[in-house]
Length: 534
Image 1 (cartoon, helix red, strand yellow):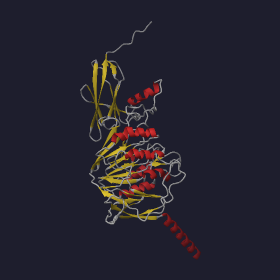
Image 2 (cartoon, rainbow, N blue to C red):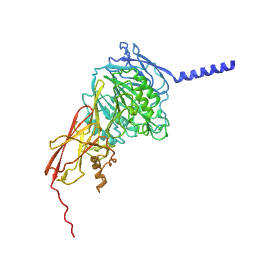
Image 3 (cartoon, rainbow, N blue to C red):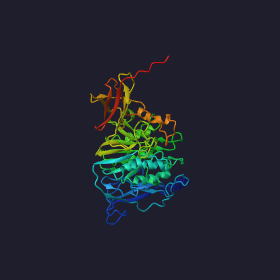
Image 4 (cartoon, helix red, strand yellow):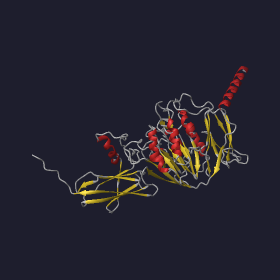
């Protein structure tokens, strides 16, 4: 019996020793950086009630601004920016909200380097904040998939997107929804230089093309991302909006060990649960990740992960999800049939991409590919306007003014009274089939167009030169079209007088705004076939 107790005591002491080595305590202070030098001065006071996290646990600073968190050998400690404060930014305008603790650094054998060894845990990990005026009404800028595979494509990104928003005013910050580059992670610094030109604080999340592919564990797939951008999972506040940014790319695929799958690790959802404990119920919760939650029978996203996320959000009446990845533009609305726990459906905006159809197509007048996405949405970016817990989204087509929200496609000329299947198609880029789209001819009465699920014929027309010309075009052929989720159709009237006729299309979006587009076509006298020669 004595031998048993001696062995048990030795084992418990050994386990305690391992625990003490694996679990240390990170301590620090969140403070008013009055002189903005990034150093805690004696006269600078701490800020109470600020959330700080180790990626799973979330604690609030005490009355002196101090916090304490457990850390292991691979943690990123970060502060959750509170409303009314700003974080310092680096020279690329990326928020400096974190400290990486990797005493041994990232694995050495990675193709693209990760984090260098950080050494022992500092005695104090402090976070400076400065007060700023934040209105409950503000605007953010949203990029989907910049995804440049080469230096030339990074130039396309700069010309088509960055140059359009240089020095933009009235925007609080920007966010890129993953696939910042296309597999070549050595392009991350070039991407950061491009984003820095815009002049806004900028947040980033990890996509499946920002990963370390030469790893055997999902927890290591973000090593280079962490070195270049910091935590892959974090949160921040602005006004009455709480943003939660998550890496939802599981690599390797936990089911097959090959490729990737959409989903979350338990630790990530634990972080969401712990984070939400400190968020008021009347705030808007905005989740941002790369792969959309639409799981398609579990083939693209783990349904059990989505369900736990929905369960965590059930007490929050105001929610929005943002994703990209698909290189199309879609509005998803999740209801109780899909596990959503509230009467009002959960809206996910699956954003169109800045790279469009992967920088394909012929060059436009700016020297960049047209890159129209395969559902007929032109490449571009989005603005989201917030007013407390309300929001409105507007898509901005690259190279066009803000009124270009509908593309109208139809024949340019038809024969008078001649039987035809010719039709008017309207692609309402931000639309879905719950919206109303109408048309009028020559100022006549408004009539409803019918929603259709088909490939946009305007996109099909873009493929014609690539598939029919006998000369080689520069650049790359666009990908084949896919069924568009925002396409409407009506027959083209041919029983009109000979001459030019005017088409007027209007669409009302989910936010009550009416968008219009106009076009013309000609009706000409019918021509018969020439007589057959005998």
